[in-house]
Amino acid sequence: MSYESVDFFIADTTPQKLPIAGVTVKILSQNGAIIFDQKTTNTSGQAAFMLPSDATYQARFYKQGVSFSIPQYFEVLASPSTNAFNIAGTLVAPPVSLDSRLCVAYGFFRTVTGAPAECTQIHIVSIFDPLLLDGAAVTTERVIVTTDKNGYVQVPLIRNGKYTVTVAGFENIQRVITVPDAFNVSLPDLLFPVVGSITFDPAAPFTLAVGQELTLSPLVVATDGEELGVSSGDVIWSMDDQAVAAFYLEPPIIRIRGISPGTTQLRAVRANNSIIRYPDPGILGVPASITVTP
Image 1: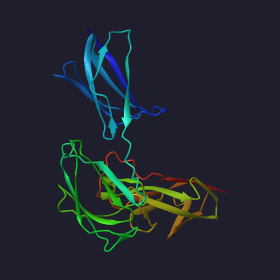
Image 2: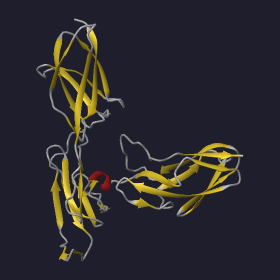
Image 3: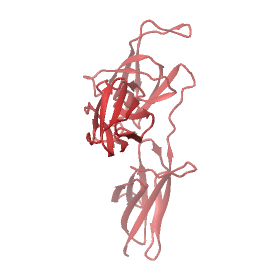
Image 4: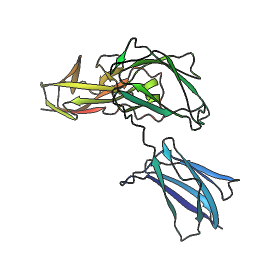
């Protein structure tokens, strides 16, 4: 017996076979009685282990929103054999409303231990009154939905409708949501939105001459799909090197003026960090590079 390198490469089932990061890989004995190790896949979808050879193990895989065939059994062979295993994960397709007036809110909930929050009740109350939808009167009532054994729940809601939502475990926090005009939306994002992306018109990166002004029209979008204003208080803007370029916030636009030749970056950060996301990719689309020419 010797210890050998064992690599798992996890990719989705699309034709591109894209790697899946953040998958928990747990290695157990063949009968599942002993846990040998546990790792998380990196951005390449790889999880690497050192395991005793000449033995058969079982592997289990988990990532929220991805389904795997589990357990899977594999044998570790001694060198010079290579112990590399390709594992396929099927991305769970989000539900799509067949009714053009409705949007399906869906998502997973967990307990503080990270386990699925099974049988968690979510109370939803409409705050539009009255409303006629395609000629039908919409009743104002409380809807209660409950997560399944995987902590998953989905519920159709009227597009552009406003609701108050209370989640068991957050009884002291009542969220007010506005449903987007879309086929579906992540319910956790709808309940706890943060600034998710910023795009510019014209698109970044930017080039201008010394003394020249460039007018930008930023589109700030939250993770629930809501479009936010430039001066909404949700974003704090800054310039890395104000000796190269200066910016002027004139809602709904931003003006950039070239000061001296060089490069700098226009940055934006969330003004409110009370909602914690992990992992957090930050705000997509920033920082935006600026080049000032003579």
